[in-house]
Length: 134
Image (cartoon, rainbow, N blue to C red; front, side):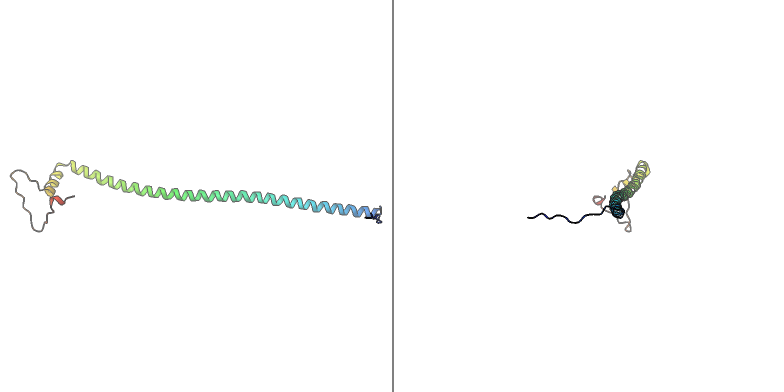
């Protein structure tokens, strides 16, 4: 292959230097714009990722809070039920400590009587069988 010589020569005058400087300035400006744009994209994506992570954490915290509050309400309901049963049991204990009440229960439920006492049952009062008692 034959090597060709380049027959084009650049003129070295003020105008060509000025054009070369303008071209170099424009090239540096576009390069600077590209760098700034790239930095802006990197910074915006970084803050976007931070915002996304914090949003996910906030949503998880709210979900956990809702779950805990439902557990609290169910536990409060259970406590209220336990307190009512405890009150009922305490009243039964107080009643069972009363001698007159115990005698009444024993007479009504188990058909006990004092010595020399006769028990009469009326047809309107249907007595339940002793073996069927609770």
